[in-house]
Length: 307
Image 1 (cartoon, rainbow, N blue to C red):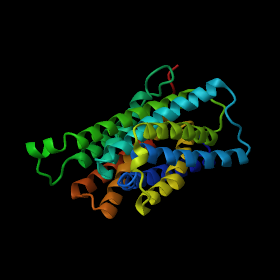
Image 2 (cartoon, one colour):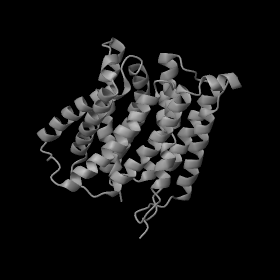
Image 3 (cartoon, rainbow, N blue to C red):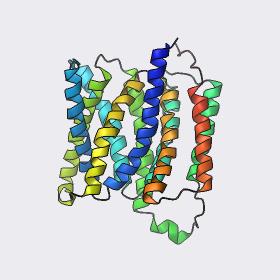
């Protein structure tokens, strides 16, 4: 039985992930307006990894000591940060922040579904299944093109950047779910905060390497918007990643995946408020449906793991 202290920590951690990560889509959208995507994401993770790593060492946390631990950290870092986060940053060059967050909402479905597979799979309760269906219905309502005229010319004009960006973000959701489940199921003695710091450093150097290889250094511009977005992601986004890594090892996949339902609601509101991205009455309804789904999933009692 979960004690009250741990339950409070879980609720607080979920709220941080819900709200802060919902705002990162806006920061990414602003940042890629001036900064090249791979170097933008890589610089964020290198700085964050150094700062969090130093703090973790100051708190007495040891570095990974074995090849197995480094392998686990590298695989999770590549899946979550290079693959998943990198594709979101790349895709938001063409896809508005609210649409990106809506696509990423499918992560909750991927996590819950993949989390049922294998000998360590966790079966879904009836309430959790209903909550996932309700949440998915809310995502569909949010993604429905309210008030837009769909024509052949409109579709073909967005075939290149926009559609490729959307596809990249959809792949990102799958990679994030795979990395989360893989990290949860692999035994590790490395403290979550130290693990997160090392994942960021590995991912940061890989992303910067990609950026330099494709010639992004010539497109880096020192602007207030770009640097402000980078600073926000370093301070808030990456710190929340450390919180997420703790949750990966603490809660069930179904509960873990609920953040992907709330993030779009936050992103839609912020995108409309700051960048003027469309927020319709239908999207507002979708947000309410999503919240209902989250409540159902988060209050469902987990079933016993398969033997």
